[in-house]
Image (cartoon, rainbow, N blue to C red; front, side):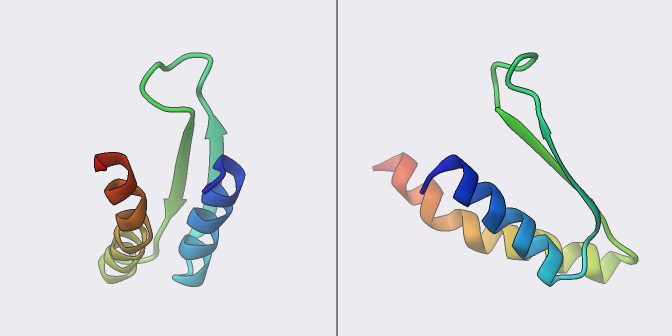
Length: 68
């Protein structure tokens, strides 16, 4: 999956779970660990948990690709 498509998928997943103030910050020039930082706010604990589970679900195929 391309970088831009993956970022759009992440932002859409957060938006689908009603994430607030979603920000994508490019940090590749200051970090060797990752290129982007995605930040979102949630209204309550259950919403934040749903957002996290959604991101885990969409990242699973990518993690499997990295292992093989």
